[in-house]
Amino acid sequence: MTDIRSDRAALFACLQDPVTQPGFWARVADDVDWTVEGTHPLAGGYRSKNEFTAATFARLARVLDGGVKLTVEHLYVDGDTTVAELVSTSTTKEGAPFDNRYCWVCRFDGDMIAEVRAYLDSAMVGYAVLRNELSRQAG
Image (cartoon, rainbow, N blue to C red; front, side, top):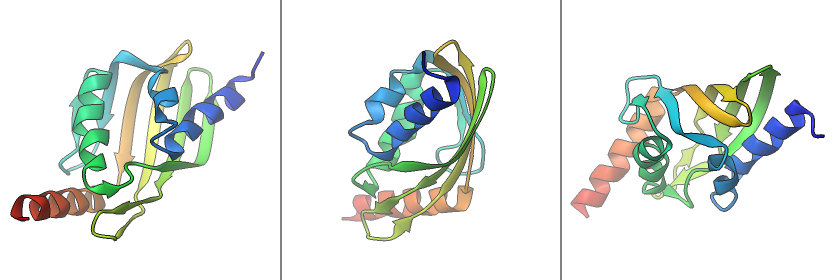
């Protein structure tokens, strides 16, 4: 039997590379309640995995070279709650570092992530997304 902390560490480690991210998404409930806090283009409440990934990860993938890459800095586990502090190791398609920091407060229902409240640097996301999307429209 794998202990819960090791299991959650392995799960969040899947976010390091778009190739391994399906292992993470397989453990997110289809009807996840995911709230992205802030005042930026990705902020909002999402009521499904598909809605969340289309509005956030897929949108970021269009402006980040190689897609979204997140590394775990700290992981706190207490029962059905896991708090993951993550840092982006991505680069924009313009070549600028996208070293955003995230804090995801996750509630698990068994092995599945059922609810997330995500906190991040609103200014960095807004700047990177809008600047890169506008340059794509102009080009």
